[in-house]
Image 1 (cartoon, rainbow, N blue to C red):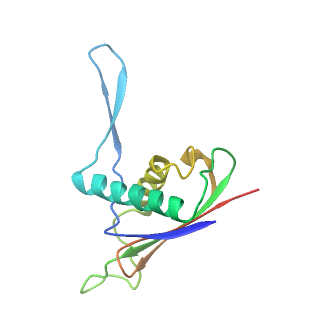
Image 2: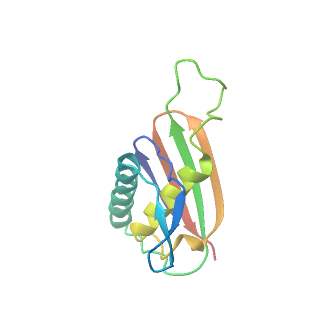
Length: 134
């Protein structure tokens, strides 16, 4: 098992936009801004450092479980007692899982078969726990 925290403002990964190229092929482009790129780079760098520090070998195959707990900054006048507002939890999750793939935590995020995700008010960032399922 590996567990670590990535500090920073959780940023959702946008949707993909498709278009037809001049050759009649369909191409998909990620709608991403600078904030997303920075957030994913921070996750990738932290995950890579922790993987090395904790002497953790990448999961090259097999099922993996993941818990993500996103800390969201609490607004001055929150609408709810929990962060049941944007950004969407699935888009936050997509950004983290793709960044973990980039950091070679696993071969591909398709290996994740058990996933628990939560948004809470707290210090901005994400706490990540990953384990191999035998």
